[in-house]
Image 1 (tube, one colour):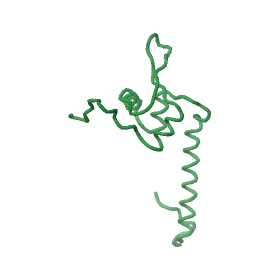
Image 2 (image 1 turned 180 degrees about the horizontal axis):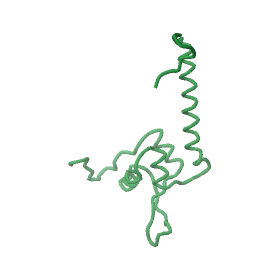
Image 3 (image 1 turned 120 degrees about the vertical axis):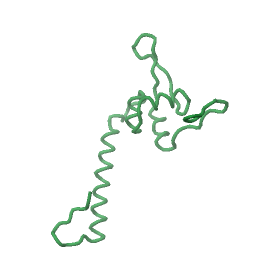
Image 4 (image 1 turned 45 degrees about the horizontal axis):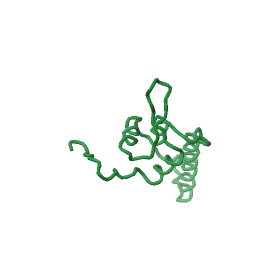
Length: 114
């Protein structure tokens, strides 16, 4: 995807390119805010919502919960005795800023093939 040139044969200036990039970044930031906007004021999120916010699969987020890589709580889901993981808005922000928690000491976790 190239930068659009206003008139044919005219090379864009450095200032023009910077201005174009700033405008594109502004549009990207606005789009991200709109995507995350449904979360404003919400205190708890399900694994599907957290997965969408982080660009991960819901299964991955459930595994992070199960392995205590993120702080999450179980709550009744309305499906009999089944419970679902819930992640606080504060924890979602922490994950976005800092990443996953380390594996708890004493857990026997092995990576793929391990």
